[in-house]
Length: 189
Image (tube, helix red, strand yellow):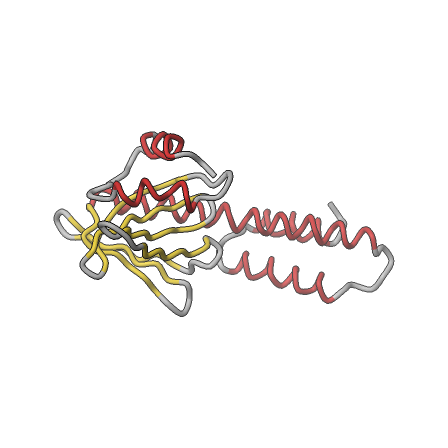
C-alpha cells in the first residue's frame, strides 16, 4: 500500500488535475490503492449533491466521497469492464459518465479543462490494461498448449482465440497484435 506522501507525489506529477474540495478523499487513497497501483488521472465533481473525487489508476476508475466526519461512498470499475466514457461540457464545467455495459455512473460540475485529459488518459489505460490481459492469456494458453503438445485443441484454446477476436473487433488490438497473439496461442511464434 502506498503512503500518503507517495500518493501526493503522484498527484503533484499529474499534468492535468482538478481537486476542488477533495482533500478528505485524497487522504483516504492510500487505504484503497493496491501495491503497484499507479494514479494516472484525477479530477473532482458533484454527484448526489456531494463532492466526489474521480481517479483513474493503472487498474481501475474510482469515484470516492468521504463524509465530513465519518462515512465513505466508493464506486469502482475495473478498466476491463468499462465499455465507454461519455463527456460533455459548457463554458466552464461539464460531466463525465462511465458505462460498464449495463450500468452507468457519472459526475457533474467537473472543470472543463480537466475533462478531455481525464478521458484520454482513462482510454489509454483501458487499452493498455486490455492488451496486457490478452498478452497474459496468450502466455498462459501457450504454456498449456506446450504441455499438451499433440493433443486436440482444447475448449480453453478455442475460448481464448474467440476472446482475442473480440478484442480485435472492439478495436483494442490491431491486426498485427491480433496475429501475433494468435500465432503465440497456436505455438507458431
